[in-house]
Length: 436
Image (cartoon, rainbow, N blue to C red; front, side, top):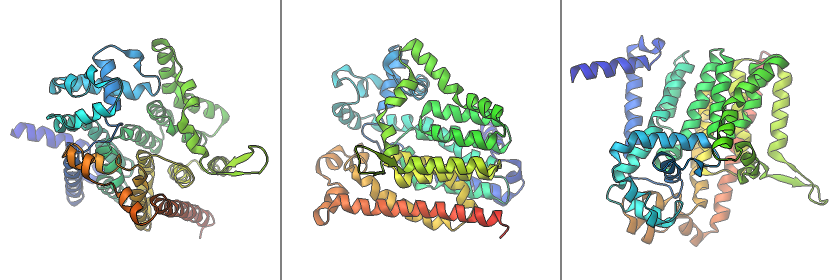
């Protein structure tokens, strides 16, 4: 046991940058916050589930891993192949998997019947814990990447604390159980290499995040024009950023017969970018607010000629702030903002209270999915109570005031806070440029 403890201690030391290992109090603080964060995560892992998305990637992954149905996935091939790999690794610990999830009598796809059978199964707690275990490694990897990326003035330690007790990160990954933590890890790896001035590696890992989840495509042009300085570099970095998606598309075409790029264009999620718009009053002519703001940000960044690391993460932060302020988004998407917000909060403590307001508004915002985002989440604990008898917060609010209107008020406050953050960032950048 002593030898194992010694090995574990040595491995932990390697996960902490030397600048933090040299200070005993800082090193102790890292261990303390790691323990606190782990205890919070472990307390949710066996008991919470989101219908249907907790089971969907593992159901598809099982068809790949156990039945050789390689053509079952038609988009985001990488993420479902990763889940197939997780299942291969976890299979000795899941001898009952067929009866709990992949029983043909439960229907095709993640049906309500399958979900209800799952949450009432005697091994549901163990299975949920194991399903979330791979996510835990990516999540902790993100926390330690923040340590390695920010090694000056204990900023990395503060970012690490922010991540370990971040309610958005914990909710999305370990309560709602979404795999977005995997793409976030790849993005943070990309940022780490950008800080290390390894532009090709940075774009490659950004490309991995794009192959896993298509939303980081909006970051690609910003990475390219900030990390590159000449047209030839723009082309080279773009190629590195699109390489993983290109490989995934070729494999998808060979194995499945469909192109991931073609599927992306047809996804209804793209319409979220066009959520807020102004009509011109003639035919269907309109302008899309996010598109206008994003192009404005891109042009401003291009002509600014600032290739610094600070400009990179701040520009990416602004792009996501604008997206969440002006577009419809699902609850799990909000984790995309957290890595960049971590950089901003450790730089300026004023953003902590804005973050608190943001969390409150987000909590109300997700109530627009009654059942799925509140009481159903705890169904494994007591299916009869949480699914059959408990009323959702949406229903309770609606009894006294129109719930949709109530939620939209908080959604509006959220947009105001996000836009205020953009204003503060731009204002500070302008003052810094003028030397004020």
